[in-house]
Image (cartoon, rainbow, N blue to C red):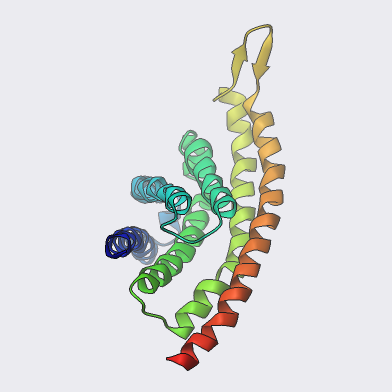
Length: 220
């Protein structure tokens, strides 16, 4: 049990440090260079963002082996959603990397993750603050739908480039082919279906956590 807590604490600490560095870097660059800093956000912090999102896939393993108590499917939807947008849509198309939507996405993702990992990190070592608990269970309510809208807009902006360059489109045997812009359009519809499912799960989780939290506080 001690090893599990130590591992989870270090994992959450690493993620918190990574996302805090990204957010601080973006803030400093904006105050230094203004609106111009938004265009090269990906070039400045894209590597660290990809590293943090890649490491976050470990959370699926955490849930699978039982060292983290959460539902696997909602977390899987959230993580794969980001992986697809970051690695498939943004990283593969340099033209998209210069769009303002990338900066907006990174801001939303890091706001959510900084609060979530702070809350998780402190929870592992038994520290609980009512304000932080409320924030971690509430901040996603306005931001998560905005994330999905920004992700959908990034896909929409990337479609002309996937059509022009033929990225990921390929021919299969027997005169079959995969035209990747069609795949993205299908995924675009699935994105909103997944948002409804994830939002419903997070809302139920918020209701349960905030219902239990005052009781724990009274016992302490």
